[in-house]
Image (cartoon, rainbow, N blue to C red):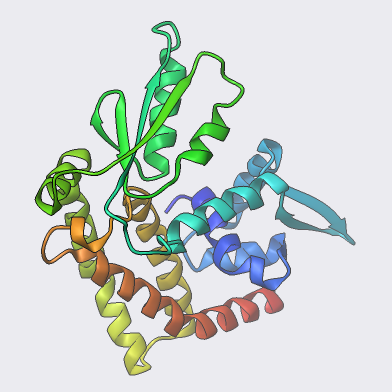
Length: 266
């Protein structure tokens, strides 16, 4: 895990629950558990402050760091993607988006496609994207000030369940996503077994949970959160999410108490 990514993970999982601020020496102590040297932490923190992700204030001879508004917004968006799920059962209808972007605006078209994918849409054809969930408004809002982007939104259903599953298999690479979930389970299941047995130290709880969040996040970002009736049989995503939530619940107190002690001693 890169130091920059680690800092975001620590703020998202731990520091935001502890007032959102940390002295530089405390951050150095916590990141030392992950093998990040003091000098690297200082360089990365200075760079993130210059880029507008972190804000610093002097307290005596020390600097105390917190996330900027932009940093908090980024973490809120990450939390929504990691922990948010579709709130109601699927009604069997698809939300379709078609778009047109001038050929001269290729960068803008790429941004639009990335935004659609980020909100769980899959491409049935280059200019036809769809989702079982109504998530078109964030996409509209993101390009509201771009007159060159035209979005048309429709709702539709198909001939039946078999056609729906066929569409899902074509719009998303569910096989690759399932393999990623399986790899995640194999890597982190032993740590969950140790947590359940009460055989986990404070340091192992901290490093294990932060690493799990870091590993889980890119997979779930690619997961369109499809309803069960659209998923392949023996879908590993259900088991992976259960493992993720169980691990976080069992490790939280031990991990955070250990990080508290490191920061206090620093």
